Length: 414
Image 1 (tube, rainbow, N blue to C red):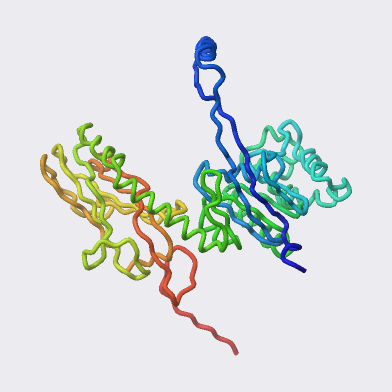
Image 2 (image 1 turned 30 degrees about the vertical axis):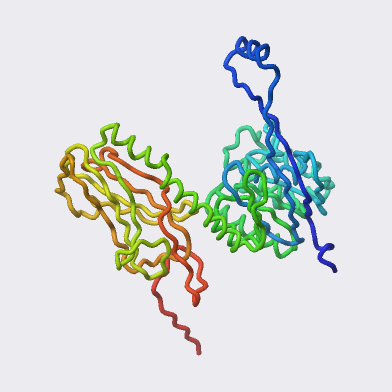
């Protein structure tokens, strides 16, 4: 079988243009005068701009990018909800999608009625849907609520029904857009088990997510788009590394830009007692670094200026992984250190924390920095989601997770 025969989705030079009103008006009177004065003016932009890619049969294919990059729009084009203005799109198989809350589900029908409606839309015979019905209900965990109007469902129930229908009615291609956080832990586990079944059956999944760890875990290849254009696509690990590097560079430029300086200076004008001046990530040799290995000492140093007297401030630093997972966030009050510090107007100072032999595994990590009043009653100054550092993967390790835990193995048999 040739490579071409294995292609289940092929997109060539796709374009989709949106038209937006150029003038924003608050009242009908304003709109009329604006129309007389300026005429009918509209601005246009390409939500999808010359996008080309191929997906192989049986792949789990990731799509990543910033908010507004065009990820969801692209899935809607593939699903047939939107039609491209130019280009060609070929899909070989039945496509089912979970693109947004309630997509394809009628709120005035019961869960049961929606199952059969979805089957009809997919072109499936009633006999086939009946054979799958009990499995869908069981998988969704809706029980007796399957006979209730979907309008009465919670968000989680809505998505559980949608996921159950989309996966169990056996499409060839499943499109998923940021829905795996729905439901409790047991349902999420069932979702991943269903993913594995899909892959074993040779089904194809297109998966949009901001959770880069999850994309790396389940996707064979990944497409990165920005402003409707393809930046790169290929091996998932390589694409995610490029995306993170770009994000890190944008964060660095933000810190160095006038906007960042303005944010700190504005705090001074607002008479904050203490303002954060800058943040340094250094190693045990007091050298600035961005990249460390698991087991290295990582030191975060925060310099500040004092504008008003402040008694017993609390200093805090939190670490978050790039996917938003909260790793650790101690502060000086919880650790009962420096409880009686008194800062005087005109002083300069710093606080720093040393993470000794950090056991964090490979990834990019962001910081929340905060200075608080006594007993953390109020925030004096804070900066959130600032890029901190990267932990690189050691060449002799291939371990996934959050931290490395010292351990020993023992195997016994007789």
